[in-house]
Length: 213
Image (cartoon, rainbow, N blue to C red; front, side, top):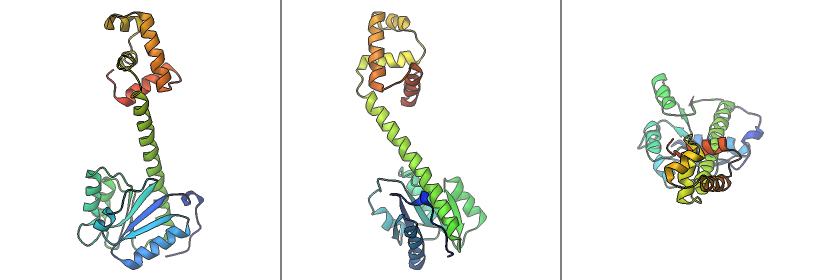
């Protein structure tokens, strides 16, 4: 492997998992990653990796295509079926075009043929970690949104959904058999609890929650 300049973008609390039954390759890759400020853990098989607890922060997987037992491509499918969205970078000494196309179509970040340049691997890792950071942020935002929605009363949720569907306060009042002022109060409470800065913001939240429109 060739020397490379450390990228500041790589140096954070991110973790890179390296799965390869070639101990020398695992050591070389993990040493490179650690030299750039990344945490790295190595595994000799997919089964060994699965025994590790999920990492709470940004992470990615550098995976050899040809492993003992389950292949890297089959392991990719297995992870997806289990709901594990960890970005994968494949590396192989036996890769061909059909194999790389299959991996990329299944969501792999990159497919590197050994021997590869250090910078190519670091670029792929950086891309994978950025993808995972975005995914984690989206998951957190979604969880926060559902948490705020859970604080609404049943009537506030109902009115939020009806308002987001385009009904005016008067129409909602008629449909629910209540007064317009009551609708306004519930709608205002819903906006406060949801931390909506505007009605348009509330509509976007309703859409993100999958409320009927």
